[in-house]
Length: 71
Ligand SMILES: [Zn+2]
Image 1: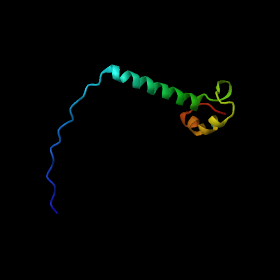
Image 2: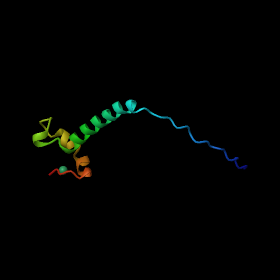
Image 3: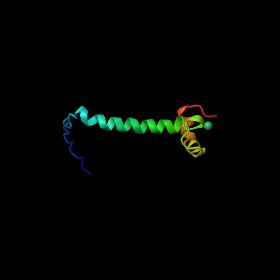
Image 4: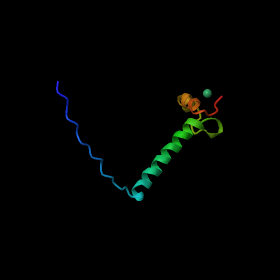
């Protein structure tokens, strides 16, 4: 079995991304993160949008994994 010859790998060219193209995606990611943190950490009791405990029980393990107080 013959060994393959080493292949010269050139680094990928760097591409500059303008900040104004990043800001909307950063805001979108921040909004999604805020919603996730809210539902995992604070959707219970006086702060709950959903009156039942379905959301609380659905994210219960994630809440304990994040170290947030629960019960
Ligand atoms: Zn708990």
